Image (spheres, rainbow, N blue to C red):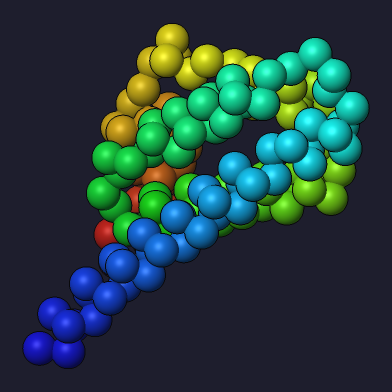
Amino acid sequence: SNAAKSKPSCIMASQRAVRNLYKRVMKSVPRVIEQYEFTSINETECKRNLAKLFRQHQTVSLPEIKEMLLAKGEMEFDETIRMHKTPCHILKVLTTDIDEKLELDGGVSSHEYAKLSGGSGFMSDFYQGK
């Protein structure tokens, strides 16, 4: 009974964390463009591409993959704001239209999917709770 009550609150907390990250990322676009001195890129285009990156993973249903994607997003955001990323990397993220990329399992890359779905026997057992 307690598990049934806590599961929806965990889901809501996860969704809230993603929305919070999304808002912080979108609000930071003008600052990032200024910090990295990108004079020739369009803020609206950057925001559109970032929104696509978030939507790319909206169908992921496994909690451990959701947690991994959220942690990865938080790290990417932190490293970007602290200017620990190269301008080339930031430009690629801000200006690449991801609609052309193939998606696997709701947007998880094939490398991440292999790691999470049993790239090694230990990790496969770990994710299955064995």
